[in-house]
Image 1: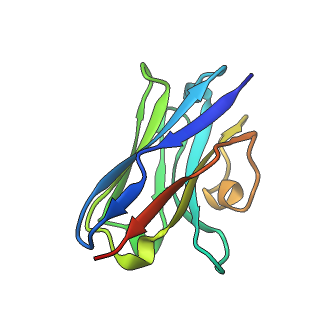
Image 2: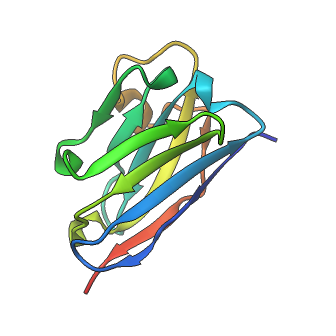
Length: 128
């Protein structure tokens, strides 16, 4: 059964850091574009970042550029999202999703809901 599992969320103070993990089982992430998006209560889903097949291209939404870093670990079959300088506005449930097939034109394709697998989400709360 193909599955994505996110972990690493939690409660952190403003300015703090968290590293989210998106681990796949039942399939290899090497052949997938993997995206992170988030959804806060009462707000629409927002794309955060994505990494294309074999790390050939990376995108970030403007609000996280310079603070978040996405990366792959092929051996661990995991994609990470390192989040630094966290702000209260980053509070949300974070999801990872994986899209197979040809590399999409942009991360927006995945952020807008086109994916083969999605995890259950991990809560990130930034508060003092």
